[in-house]
View 1 (tube, one colour):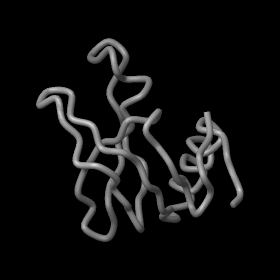
View 2 (cartoon, rainbow, N blue to C red; view 1 turned 120 degrees about the horizontal axis):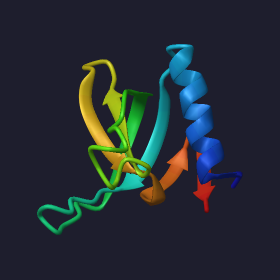
View 3 (cartoon, rainbow, N blue to C red; view 1 turned 45 degrees about the horizontal axis):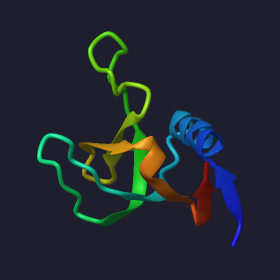
Length: 92
């Protein structure tokens, strides 16, 4: 299976979002406030959205905002927990 590095995947997500082209991804969920995970989450159509500012959150660099299409509902994922992007396996 083909691979892609984490930040290359993020850059490609940004490019696709600028073109309004949804992408697919999979990641392990993580909820720090409840200290739990719901396991693997698959998103078939996503677009990035504005994230947290660095002065508002210590996790701004790794907590990535996205919308799940077509509903547009706002969600978050942790970049280090990204496992797949558009069929590519994400590696560090």
